[in-house]
Amino acid sequence: MSDLQRAPLCYLATPYSRYPGGIERAFADAARLAAKMILAGVKVYSPIAHTHPLAVHGGLDPLDHALWLPFDEAMMNAARVLIVAHMEGWQESAGIAYEVAYFERHNKPIFDLNIATMVMAKRARPSLRDHSDGTTAADLEADRREFLQNTPLAHGKTPSQQGGSSV
Image 1 (cartoon, rainbow, N blue to C red):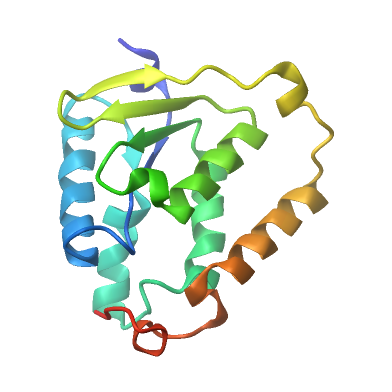
Image 2: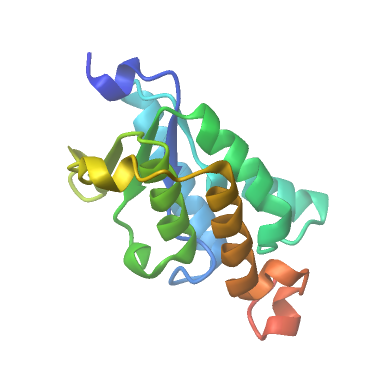
């Protein structure tokens, strides 16, 4: 049994808002990927696969970071491992960058997933100086506020107000 299969919960990072084909395709691709991982014995939480249906069927803005970030952070706290799916656009995703930084600050392992081969590689940890640099809860909260301020939909604007697609 692998370390990932033994982990009580893994958090799956996938692109969403700017995914080629839109958020519906991002949801479907994330759900398929999460299902494959569950079949492989990995207990995985996908913020896209698990919350997109809530947004669509509950009338919530799927792109409102101010709404979703507190829930995502609770799940990141609960998860022992981050798995970054190398789907198209993953490197440009502000959400994935935030999730990676969050897991690094909390000294939790990060795995990169090649979605074509389903092979995962554990990332080398940042230097000791990088993850024991005195980061405080206040620093994390400042980072959270900065993320929300610099993310277009963080101010309660709808996708149509931002010129993007809506559900």
